[in-house]
Length: 155
Image (cartoon, rainbow, N blue to C red):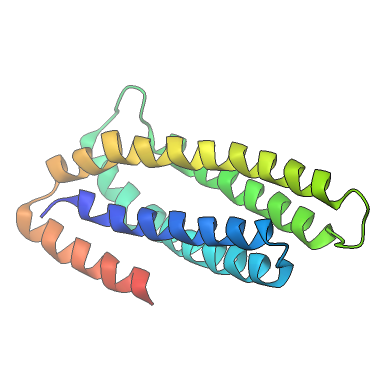
């Protein structure tokens, strides 16, 4: 078993964000907000598990050029800030505003920046975090921890 098994959670998160954007495109602001709320809840849970369980294990590898744990936590912070701004912008949208289309386009632009950051973060995990965790853990430890994390993420 490998920590790459945790990438399923990223796929699920991407799907939720896409559902949010589809609702926004249909001008279904209620559903857009519901999907964003669910996305954020699951994203924050995923980040918490990484910060509480994975990054302490990652420290076993010692200093990693271009990949200190602070990079991951810093990206988490930036992602949380982006989501807060996206939510505030979404809540402020008024469907009766004559410029609503432009405001939705602007929101999509902001979301594109967020998605770029999230993709960069995912690639850092895929290329650095998960392979390093595989290297510094035993097969038994990986199996136990991955099973625990996958069950936690489903809650």
